[in-house]
Structure formats: structure tokens, C-alpha cells
Image (tube, rainbow, N blue to C red; front, side, top):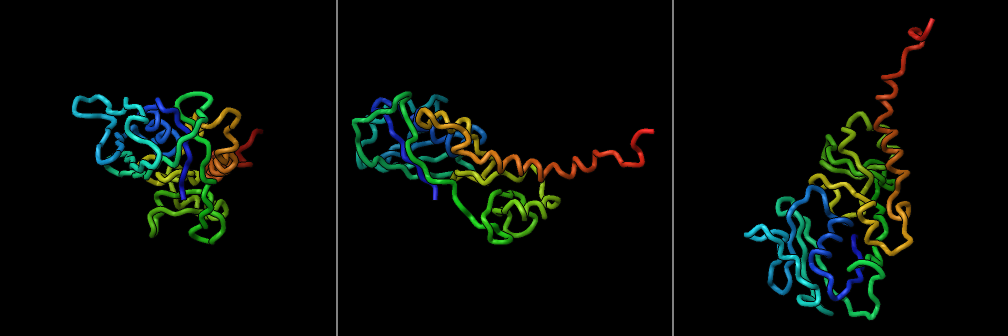
Amino acid sequence: MFWMLVLARHNAELSDLDRLLRDVWVECCEHLSAFTIHGERFSSSNDDDESDFSVPLDQVIGPGSSFSYEYDFGSTTKLRLSVIGQSTVAPRRGPLCLIARNNRPEIPCHLCGEKGEYLVTNWPESPYQIIICRDCLKKKAKDVEPECVIVLPNSPRGGVCGYMEEPSTALRWYPVGWHMGEIYPAESEEVLNEIMNSDEDDESSPCDEDAGV
């Protein structure tokens, strides 16, 4: 469901790839991470509290290489990575560039089957997490905590730990010319805020009989 295609310079380091994966897909609480390449493990923190990630990519991987990445060694998100080829084209700026990515997934609402728009991480019934559309969220808003409802993230870490999608950090890895509205449904977030704050607005409104003299 989730995939991306990344263009890398030969002298890009594991630290650059780690940063891209964090910014686009997994960062939530600055957890540790690690790559496993041809049986060797490279960690963001070794026994001396220093990173193993200052290794150029072309020293450890090449066309045909397959390797893995782990983020957070408690509630782990594990990714499969591979080098699909070599190109004479290089990123215009920086060591890496995200040049293709899956569209935001379309997952049906758990309650009605329509297109889901939000992820609820403390659903009071079974299952504990659900995908829900905006109409059903309006009906169930009083049953969930506002901080436990987020726009359905375009990420394999959605619903894990404290993950929330950060389009501003992801955007730095896109080619020049892309803007926020092309990678994140800001309108969905605006609707979410309206739905979850509607009761507060109603309670704070003065009663007609108490209005001025």
C-alpha cells in the first residue's frame, strides 16, 4: 500500500536516507533506527552513543541490493528497501530526492463503507483503531477524544505510538516546485477541527436570556 521511489547521489549517506524516511514516513518521538544490509546492522546509536550512519550509500549498496530499515525498537515499523537501478541523473539539490510516491490510500469507513478520511486511535469498541468518514465522525464525535483523531496519514506508521503526518518536513525531499496542498489534504484537517471543536463553541455561547439589557 505504501511505497516511494528515491533518487540518490552516490555520496549520499545512510544518515541522509534515515532522515528522509523519518521526515516522510515514520518520525514521531525521535526513536532509534537501524539498517540491516547484507547481514550487517547499522544503527543510529551504537555502544559509544555515536551513529553508524555516516557511511556513503555506494559503499554498502548497489543495483540489485535489498535491505531493511527499522524505526523504533519498541513499537517497530519495518520497511523493505531495494536498489532498482543506476542512473546518470542526480538530484538537483541535496543528496536525495523523492521522485514518486503512492497516492494517499483509499480505505472504506469502518461504519458505513464510504471513503474513510480519519484515523481514530481510541475507538471505544472493537477494533481499537478504525478508519472513519467525516459524516460518521460528526455522529460519533462525542465518543472519542479530539487528540486521538487524525487525518488518515499516507504512512505505514499511521496509528503507531504518537505518529502524526508532518507534510512540511516531507516536502523538503520533493522536487522543486511542489507545494503543501499537493501532498496533504489540509481541508480534511480544517473539517476535523470544526467537528471536534463544535461542542466547545456551543457551550461557550451565551444564552439569549442572559444577553445585554
